[in-house]
Length: 119
Image (cartoon, rainbow, N blue to C red):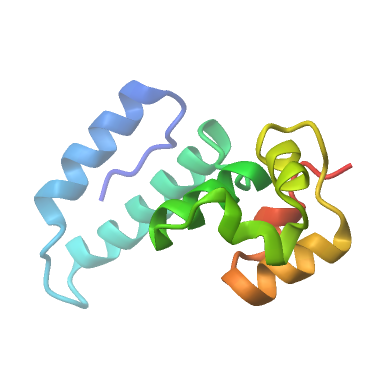
């Protein structure tokens, strides 16, 4: 096993190429151990280099609307009047905690997504 740190995208490509070659290694074999170490190194590098931030609240709402075939009017029970829904969707009004709770309870949008970038 010749494992090296992943310091750049070229190292990452080399690690992925090796991982591809040993991915189906039998459990308990040296290649299986190497695969586990490579996966940990790749994940660590990707998390540092390409962090995934929480979804923007408006994007989370729009995503749920698309998933469920909802239109702006369908959000009124959670957000308020049509004008308020429009302001939220156009980023002219922030979500209140009451709106967040209603959207979470009613549409099952995760709190993490609704509260990210809140300030």
